[in-house]
Length: 257
Image 1 (cartoon, rainbow, N blue to C red):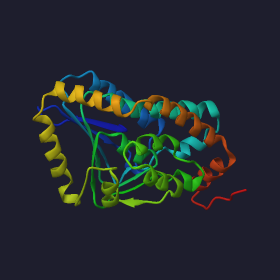
Image 2 (cartoon, rainbow, N blue to C red):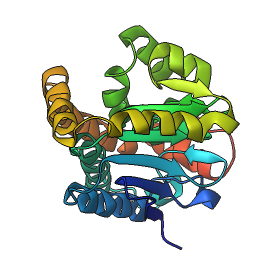
Image 3 (cartoon, rainbow, N blue to C red):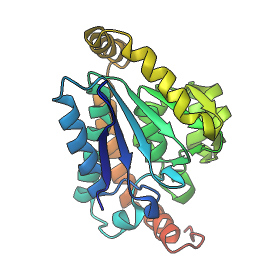
Image 4 (cartoon, rainbow, N blue to C red):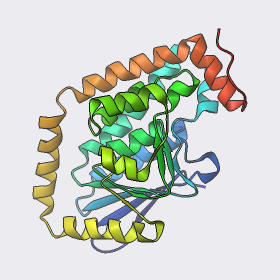
């Protein structure tokens, strides 16, 4: 089963990328990250694409990094490569010349919440929930903090990062993490409304505008990702994170020293 499904559903140039690991809550393991990167690289080279919709199968949109995979290799170089790989994929979303709309039908936590924040637009079902919850098991969500802080006011972002608490789709809309929170039966219609509006504009104008938007608003973004990735990799080497992640994967409470 492919970790990511790529579907060009009509002649308008609307491409849907679907995270396809519902049993693992669409966790961003190495295979998933590689598949997403390959799909984004393919889209970037295709001038017929106008809009990308990022969707997911199952109850969860994305539960973040694959913690079982991470804890299996407790080595700093491995963590550095993993977070660099994830950051490259996140930045590839930003660098696409076309808008990316997150279709959030369920839970989005840690790097999954990062994925929502990194998309240009996001529409969520009212049942969806959001958190940057790594701190709950000893791993501060450093890399997710990069796009989160560029979407959400600083004190609200910091509260999410420090507490790991979940917020509702309506609260995510109020904070600026998503554009619209709608009932589940209206999710696709709301996305189609945005898609139709975008398709009514020239591709070149959208491409130029998107590039300018991020260049002027996000000066220092790549440097921030580099620092955050290094920080997160070092954090994963800490005993509290190792214990926290191990406890999470074993479905028990961590024992802090």
